[in-house]
Image (cartoon, rainbow, N blue to C red; front, side, top):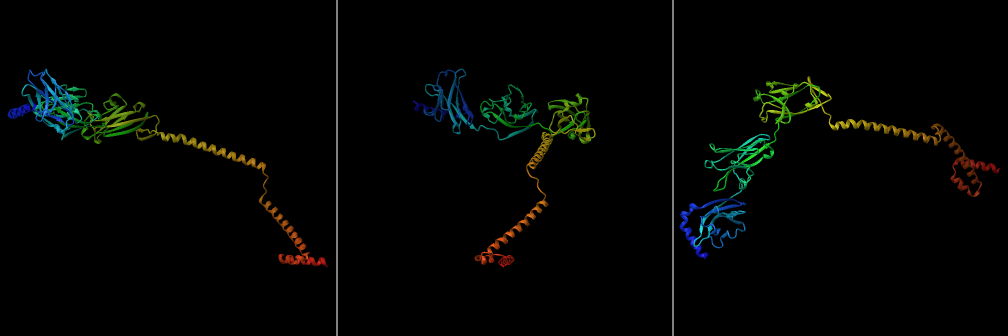
Amino acid sequence: MWSLQNLLFILCMTLRCVTCEAGVIHVTGYVGREVNVSCSYDEGYESYEKYLCNNDCGSGDVLITTSNSSKNKYSIHDDKTARIFTTTISDLQSTDAGKYWCGVTIFGIDIYTEIELKLVPDSCCDTVTKVQSYEGYSESVSCPYESQYHNSLKYICRGNRPSTCLQQALITSDTKQNGRFRLDDDKMSGTFTVTINSLTQNDSGSYLCGVQRNSDVDVFSAVELEVEEWCCVKSTTINGTAGYPLTLQCPYPRQYRHNSKFLCKGDHRNNCTKMAVSQRRFTLQDNATSSSFMMKITALEADDAGTYWCGTDSQWRVGNYTKIELSVFLQHTSTVTPGTTVGTRIPDAALYVVYTVPVALLLMCVLVIVYKYRCLKAGDTTSKHTPKTKSSKEVMGATGSRIYENQESVLTYKKQRTCSHHEDPGRDEEVYANMPTTEEIHCNESFHNRKT
C-alpha cells in the first residue's frame, strides 16, 4: 500500500514541481529553540488524519500524526475550526534544516504541502548602536525599518535573543505606552522611537528593536544602552561655623555665562529648593569674567548643613553644575578669608587621643608616687632592725689595729713554737731547714743562754 502511494507521490511531485514551487511554505527557526510549521487544508477534510513527514514521505519518514499527537521532539495540533494543523519541532539542530511535507491522508493520493525549513543562530546582530546616558535622564532609542513594514508590529525587548523577544517585549506599537516606556512610530521616515524615562543604572544593557514578519523571522536591530551614574563635574566639601558668614563659589562653562544661575538644596537634584528665592540670607553675585558666581550666606545656621547644587543649566546637563556638601559647626575654629569662616571638625581618632593621653599620664604619676612611698617605707623598716653602720674610717682603723695585734700574736706564737722545737735534739735539722734566718739566730741565742 505504502510503496504504491510513495510511487504515486514521487510521480505527482515530479509532475507538479513547476507549479508547486509557488506554494512552498518557507519557515525559519532558531538553533536550540522551537519552530511551528502550520499547514491549511480545504473544507471537508476536518476528520481526516494529518501528518508531517520528510524525505520521500515513506513509512519511516512520517515524523508525527494527529492520531499520535506527541512523539519525541514533535507535537501536532489540529484546529478544525480554522482548518489549520500545526506541528511544533523542539530543540532545533542544524541537521533539522531542509525539506518537509504536510500531509492529509485521503483515499488514493494524499494531499501534500511542501515546507522549507531554514535555521539561523539565536543571536543578533552584526551591527550594534551604542547609546550613552545618565541616571535620572530620559533617553530615546531610534529603530529604523524598511518601507514594506509600515503596518507591521513594532516592539523592543531586553537581551539578545530574537527567538523570545516578542514574548518579552517591554512595549509594542499596539500599546504605545507602558510605564516608563513610550513607543512612537514615524512611518514617513521609516523609524520607530522608544523613549525611556527616569533612567537608572539597571537599565544598562542590550536591547533589540523588532519588526514582526508573519512569513519569516522578525527583523531586528541591536542597541547597547549605557547608563552612567549621575555625578558632577565638580564635587566639593565645605565646612562653616554657625553665626559666621560663608561664601560658596560655583564655576560654570563659559558658553553658559548668559544662562540663569541657581543654587538649590536637597539630597537629590530633582528635588531641591532654590535658596536665593526661599532664603533672604542668601545672595547671588555673578562674575562672568571668571565664569563663576558666588552665593553669600550672611549668617550660617545649623540647619544650613546639607547637600547643595549650583549651576547654570536647568536641564542638568553634565558639566554645568557643582555639588557641594556643607557642614556647619557650632564652635569657631579658624578664619580663611575676611568675611568667610571655615570650621574644622575634630576627627574621632583625635578626640580619642585628647581624652585618653591626659588620663594615662595622670595614672602613671600616681603609680610613680605610690612606688616611691613604698620604697621609703621599706627603707625605714630595715633601719630599725639593722645595727648602725660605722664609718669607713672607723672600720679601717679598727681593722688595722686588729691586724697588728694578730701579727704580734702570730709572731710570739711562732717564736715559742719554733723554740720548743729546737729543745728537741732530734728535730734540729728539720726546724733549721724550715725556719727563716732571723728566727733561727734568735732561737739559737735563747737556747744557748738557757743552757748556760
